[in-house]
Picture 1 (cartoon, rainbow, N blue to C red):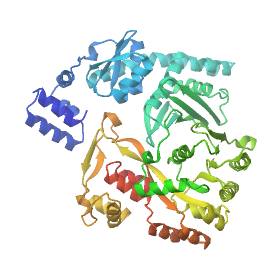
Picture 2 (cartoon, one colour):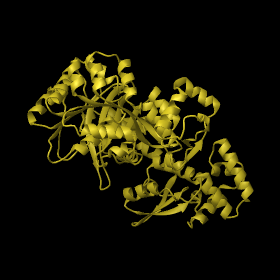
Picture 3 (spheres, rainbow, N blue to C red):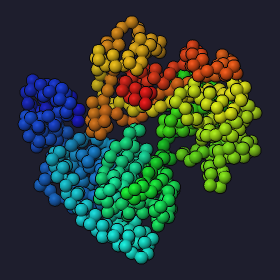
Picture 4 (tube, helix red, strand yellow):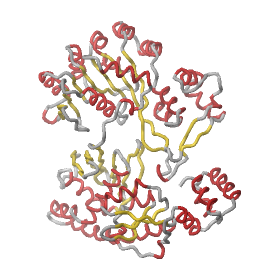
Length: 577
């Protein structure tokens, strides 16, 4: 709960004098801790009095869970990671209702998730942090017996003569199924992009990649390892008795609320088998170009170029920078009944109606180059090639663009300008690059500031000096003024307000929630085409791009930082890595 909200509740309830509340808010802010924790730690208020006051303000009942014995089936109705992160515990339920004890009655997203998961109507009660902690200890006591049971079965599976059969039985065991289901459901709820299940010497670590950053969410006993990996292999239709070779598979979870595909990769490592699951939300709505986060001028440039009947549109950036999302967004705009759109992908991440999508399979010789060559016999107007990886694919794509097709693809380069020499290195003739390339778009993903705990600040002199070492501050100011983010570039940067997230329960105390792209777009004008034909260097191309007003990724990032969408730290992290 925000300090301002809690302060208002305390003042309204006359629990503390207003001056004491304000002093506590200032002290908590300067210490960098939440107000509720500060009040309890400093013995200004007892935990029960504080949370009873919150309950009274929201007209909700208060309950000390330490006085309650919670049935195992009720406790397990809410997955343990959800209890840990969102501080909400199920303590009772009947055929229609589930009673939840929480610290924050406004966490509606979590209550809605529990409602969908259980099919029961939540009844909210306020409790204390120590009550939640006590409930978690009950969780662990209940799980310890479960793990003991799993241990015995794991040992039997590993010692048994028919290991394949034993492992398959273990994978269907209720505790293992429950652990894996909770792991997958919680990853969907947290909008994780990947799940990493990593065997260590003495335990099994589970980490989620959320907003591009890996975060450890649970540690499981080593004895659960065989069962969990076997369960994932069965779901993915992989060989459960193969432990020496890497395996790749896929499965889908369908519900009325979501449809999520999981791409599974199993890799033998020193302490067992590591599993990485990539989540692909197939029910997610395709974004619009505006939602991608493009600035007005680059947006107009992109809209102008996707209307061209032929040529190449290239999106560049490292793995995980959102290139595929950008391509699907463009395809969605181009997807009209009067055109034939075909794709060659690896893998097909999202299914799109009316688009002919094919999946490469190198094992049987179906490569990007082979698939692209076959596609050209299918009378397409628009072609999307998942990635240009080799000379052959690059040359076929360029020739296709020259013969009247619009080609969309991705390339692994650090910025838009270096994509042009990269095509040359791949053996594509200069005249083909110059005549077929319409637009090059480089991108990265930055984390967005959490709107629940956003606060403004000004840069210190030390921060400005540090920033000056990496970027020319006067150049940043000129860009901000040119793009309308500030009125004038003459004011010192120390006088500008920037923003960051303090950290709250809504963002798991990260200060960030969600991601958005930062972009640079290079349009291949006559001047740029002439430089390509005359074998201009990367520096020549960069100067020409800047002269025609290209906004770099760093500049786009600083504009978004000034508008309070992301932080300066995030921009530096993704542009300077």
